Length: 142
Image (tube, rainbow, N blue to C red):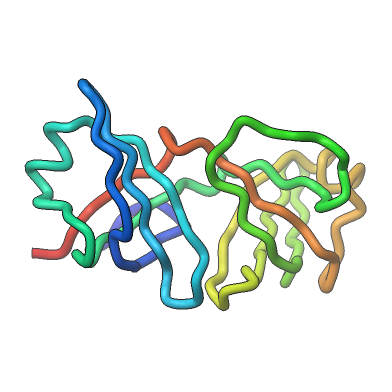
């Protein structure tokens, strides 16, 4: 499968919290990182998601916010993945940041150059990648 999403994670569904309209689906990656998605109940049924099933979590790079781990701020986002900056590729307006997650996966974020500068991003620096559960697209291989 080819997509334009820079972040494609394969894992196992480890929990589904059913709701009246939407379901919350937890996908655990091989290294232990967990990604939570909020999708419609219809999508859960269509994809035949259940605990133990393999699933893909797609997250577009511009949907990811980076924060210092010691920022002293609480966020309402369900997805907060700890890692280390692997590479920083600065552009005129935006910066591409590769993050090595603690569980072993790699994540890519696109942030403004101004944000990259204010965070002092550099290889080896600890970082937290945060994104909303509604920004996770879930898929399955057929």
